[in-house]
Amino acid sequence: MSHVLVIGAGGVGSVAVHKMAMNPHLFSHVTLASRRASKCEAVAASVKRRTGVTIATAALDADDITETTALIAAVKPAVVVNLALPYQDLSIMEACLAAGVNYLDTANYEPLEEARFEYSWQWAYQQRFEAAGLMAVLGCGFDPGVTSVFTAYARKHLLDRIDTLDILDCNGGENGLPFATNFNPEINIREVTAPSRHWENATWVEGKALAHKQVFDFDQVGPRDIYLMYHEELESLARFYPEIRRIRFWMTFSEAYLRHLDVLRNVGMTRIDPVMFEGREIVPLQFLKALLPEPATLGSITHGKTNIGIIATGERAGETKTMYVLNICDHETAYAETGNQAVSYTTGVPAMIGAALMLGGQWKGAGVFNMEQLDPDPFMDLLGQHGLPWQVRQLASPLAF
Ligand code: NDP
Image (cartoon, rainbow, N blue to C red; front, side, top):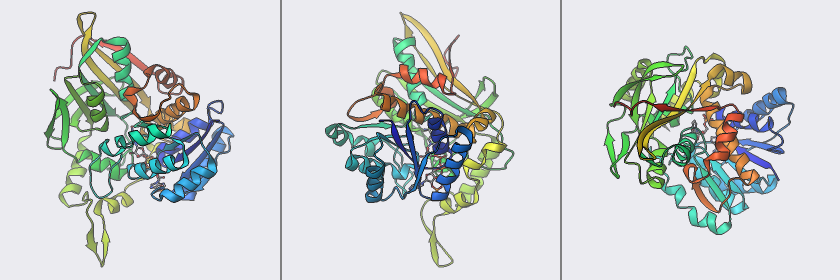
């Protein structure tokens, strides 16, 4: 059975179902469910136009466990692919357990009222998924996701030991807008305004948000400012690769983006606690989200490339080596294929691949799994075949910073 239920009809969900429809030998039936039926129908119409495949759609409030369980029971998928927001992770996991179906997502759970994303809540489901004989795969996007698979690949094929690991995420895309986020604005702003944190000598080192800057020359993009940040995969990589002495995550931001963010933060627009406005409560960040462009609408105006990879320094046959594993993705090519820009594309394609590996049985197990715990080889093979070709380079020396 290769029936899949995708929840969430945003940019990432749209890419995933387009790619599933393009691969009917891997996915015989696709159902797309999301909060607004109109969003599902628009994606289904685009899928039909581009691939000729008809997908089923359904309206769903995935915060409601009973409603979600009922939909899963009616659709009877082999796997539920959660591409809604991190707030829905636990309710969808609960529904998967109740309906007896495997689970996959791309972002770890975060409570609505607190900007604190961590795996503890989802790792707590280990025993229940294991006892039910079900598999839950966490963080199957690009970062987290492919970056953990690149690390597992480097450790399996390129290095006998990894000492330091740097993840470098560059979006070199331009959309001509003064300020827009390339994935869900609320999640994006909560992430980038959090204090920075990296793993060093078995402990977390914390710093002020976006305060530590370096410059890195990205292939096919050019030199860009990169900022030290906390990111989800640091937590699972530190847990599953205790040998790595230092793990850091860097992301590019333009000066204009940071200037806007600074002003928004200074005037209180990024607050996530409710404030009273004309007799009713509003959450400033949710109001700001309503004003900003939806990421799914940026595709047609975004040009340039993303370049995301890992740089691992360690030992191979007694010699110190620095290996760089990366993918470069073009916004316009991604848009031509699925109608979505590269940030949605680089997340939706890995989600599709993870689901295909679960359906095909190449990835199997009972319990909750992070990407670096699974065999990287079949995933790396499919990445190249489905639009995200990767490269391995040996660098002459470790990163200078
Ligand atoms: P969008 O905001 O574009 O899409 C989210 C979708 O989820 C929307 O269609 C929304 O519906 C739907 N949704 C929200 N709440 C509910 C609910 N209660 N029930 C059902 N559906 C709901 O976000 P993206 O597509 O950009 O991102 C999707 C996910 O991917 C996010 O979790 C994000 O954090 C993650 N992500 C992961 C990355 C990675 O590399 N690992 C990178 C980028 C994103 P509606 O349209 O009606 O609001």
